[in-house]
Image 1 (cartoon, helix red, strand yellow):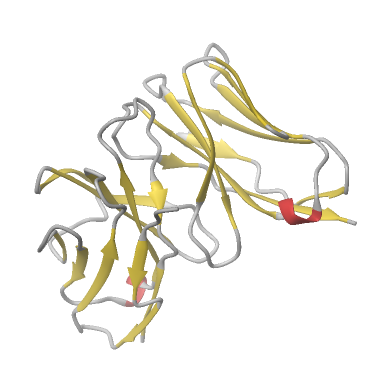
Image 2: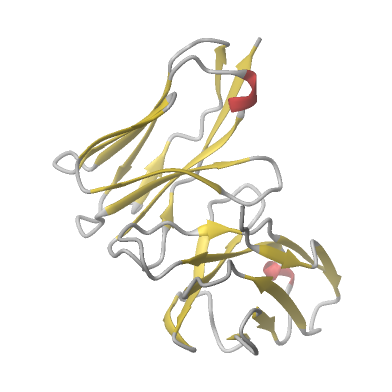
Length: 111
Length: 115
């Protein structure tokens, strides 16, 4: 079983839709959870970060962590064409350790 | 806004040659990382560096790889004898020593092509 699994998509939605991106993981030591956005041939850009279980909201983005199910989600409300990118989940066991990434989900928001 | 920078943006080399990839982490950050991403695959951890020494490395980071922080601003990754399978995007990342979350900020990457 892969440590972090993420549906690669691709996911195509109309502008204004609510997008749900998800990752599952197997390593119960993971405590820190991040979402990155990556445009083609660019570096990952940090979007959201959370610690342990719970929700965190930042503008149109909401990150959720359910440690009991080993499941994390990123919701994007009122999606825009500029949100079109690859979204990567990443997680770690410590506040300074290596990040383990998911495969990334390719999202296209069409006007 | 401070950012991680990397040079060169693209490096083409012949198999067996040595390459040095350079990174300037965000000023005052204390933790430094190298990751790589082979085309179409996930981002993979290579090595982390703290307090002038390697703190963790992956199986990928074998004797052909080395890292160095030669001065107060640069952080380098050296591949001694490149192989075809080293072709990938290499990302440098850094993190401060203050926040309690693992917020790693990535550079734009160096695309390494080994012929």
